[in-house]
Length: 141
Length: 141
DNA sequence: TAGATACTTGACTATTTTAGTCAGGTTTAT
DNA sequence: ATAAACCTGACTAAAATAGTCAAGTATCTA
Ligand code: FES
Ligand code: FES
View (cartoon, helix red, strand yellow):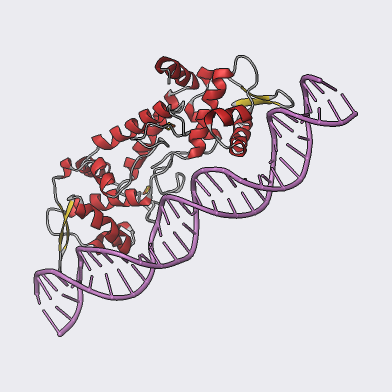
């Protein structure tokens, strides 16, 4: 099980943005330089974040992006959802009544993976951008 | 983030094996048929489980595999470890003092992913094969 | 109003990982 | 002897990932 760069970058970029949010729109170029993320890749990511109303764009010279909600209202769940980073532990289709083995009953481990999925999603539900920023200031990394 | 088939199958096969463990060695062919997993793939998986002493093999006609420990002593962690299904949330090398951005400090989100990794591993630490079997009997799926 | 900055979009691609398959063994009960 | 079942390593097709690239459009500032 691993986290993809897309999800990792999305959160990283938003933390960066949130730190500078009060003053001016933050340009992707700046985030790219500070965090070492490809500019083109960031553009893909922010396009998705914008469509899900997590950020707002300001076009033109001196433009950039601004948070569209308060930092404590943006949960990791929202971010991951926006960039299609989903937690997927079961093999079978959620809706289908068939198991992953093609049989009509769920497989021996289906419930386990379901529990795991909930366990992970709980973590994402609880963490907000604000938490991350606080954490960064406290630890001074 | 998703769970791979290898990890899923490893656990599924072991639950199946554990259910029949008292009587005779269980052949991979039977597990393959019951759980709908490719026999060749199962062989790869069990080879690893054997090397980590989670199962024992019985060669020859009427042979198969047997659990090498009690079901309550086999945690998910052990299984995942054996088949190299690892949880990897950080990008940077664990040992290296460099961050994922190549800089000397850890990135803004490093601590977050570390927490996440622990959160997930906790789940795997707590669940044993025995828990899974009980769960199956209770729910009768 | 020209030019620079920065957002916007969509298509394309190299690399890596996954999820197996395949072929050829060896061991042992009957 | 022979069949069942373990054992091993190499190979591969398909999918996912992590980007790159190209061609825009909008807006501020000089
Ligand atoms: S994971 Fe849902 S049936 Fe196997
Ligand atoms: S994940 Fe460890 S430094 Fe970024």
